[in-house]
Image (cartoon, rainbow over the protein chains, first blue to last red):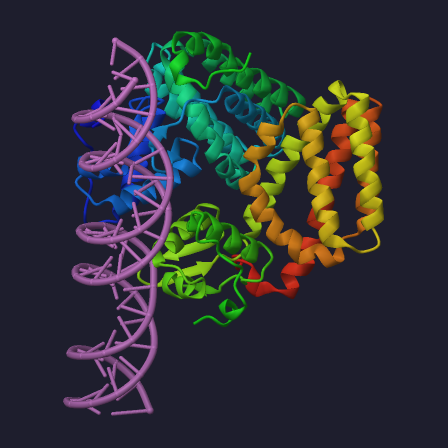
Length: 233
Length: 233
DNA sequence: GCTGCATGACTACCATACAAGTTTGCTGTT
DNA sequence: AACAGCAAACTTGTATGGTAGTCATGCAGC
């Protein structure tokens, strides 16, 4: 029985479908590195832990595997996947390309009401800049979604859910080192460019901001090499 | 028993894991509209059809649902999802943003060997331009992947698999109307811009090319309204 | 003829059992 | 002590049965 699984379980509501609850619970625990990369998860152990049968666990595992969060090895076990640096960089490339275009479009079609919403979010971000990283991450997420919606690309944003999961694992590892005040300042610059309807500036500020995220990755990879897939030299 | 399921089944190899085979087979049949949108698929019927038990069917359904290809309605049945025009447009936006950036990077780092590979693909495309749409689609796919690999973004390309599935359903519907010679010409212009290391032109030609795909969608949506999710008026 | 209720058929979801492959532990031999 | 072989335990994948919810049909009452 894997030790990290002995933590008190999140309650599973048996009156609702079980497998989606298991998926959400396990996904969140993996993203937060509570279930560390490399951890072995067996269907039997997880089913015992959550007091359910193997079948819904298996279904949750299939989804987790599709999301790139676990590796299912037939006859051997399932393992929390290690973070693939190449995938993180690829996800970053995709995200930057898409959000840069979103920022351009947003600069072209933003309204005053939308700007007011963005400003309100910035105020909340500044309130968090004293070190409340979890709250900041939620506001950051809402901030980027707002811009996508302004650009009419809420659905496109949803397409990026899959890659966002990969990046969130890194974000949670680096959260304690977030330079919150710098990030808030960068968000402010993006909003200012959108306010000025300057598509070029909006794109450039967004790219600059998203590249900032890459800065902390080498440090955390060096601190926790076991969390990452070994790079071929 | 749904009528379209009576078509002779693709062979399932029982010495290998069954559910991945079912997933691939059903996914392909949905993408090709052989299983039309709205078609009801029950676990029991599909299991009988492919001479397997319900469990691997269920597992394939879970994956198909994650891929947006079927809607699972508890107690009611599972249905091939209708094509969501908003999702297609969103997928197109994301794809364009990413491939535009890929084209820029490719123009910056292409080598002569890479260009020779692209030229060879173009020759094959011209051979297909007389109307062999399926062969053209495969070459088109390889063409775009090549550019992504040139740009060092093969992994980023893989991230787009999910949205590519949605778009492929439309592509298969419109394949007979592909203006193949125009598409080959656009591909040629992209390669020429990359050859000239002109990142701006490469980006612009790529965007122009990818927007071309949108042109045929209204026609096919009008011809087969049942295939699409009804738009709110 | 229409409405409401009961019943039966069907569905996905979950529980349990079986099968095939892998790993671990124990025993015997050198 | 080290190695090889075998049996048991473990794993995921599949098969089958039970459960709760949904829908369609038939019947009775108005």
